[in-house]
Image 1 (cartoon, rainbow, N blue to C red):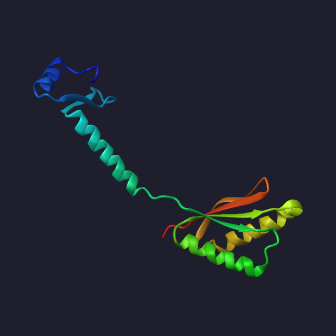
Image 2 (tube, helix red, strand yellow):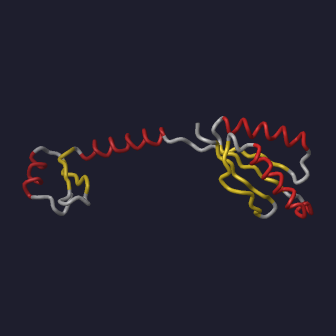
Image 3 (cartoon, rainbow, N blue to C red):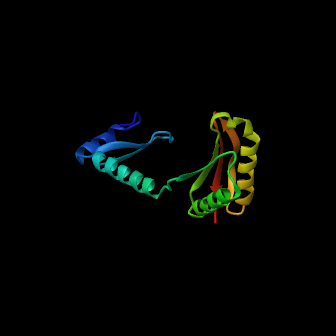
Length: 145
């Protein structure tokens, strides 16, 4: 019930055995409606559920490389990356450095940048390669059709 609800509106709502519901409190004067409150809440939840169902869910697929991944493995994984992007999923490509292989940071970055360059027709880089602990991560999102 709003602060500005007039006694006349309250009386009318009571007479109809319904509720006086404040719809938009920020309006000048605030807008109220005489409705069944339980039905109003039910309709609102129903609307939210429909909107939630329509919202697209973001799928993130991951591809893992080593700093010394050879050409054949790279091509194989690149084909998977293309498939994921064409399906509309985001791609998280990362190079995992095991043990002392962390000294090959530059190789890992070159590998990820090469992947980004070869996939630029179907995806755009969201985040450039960034080293986080023992992994260097890069995100690629599919281009809109």
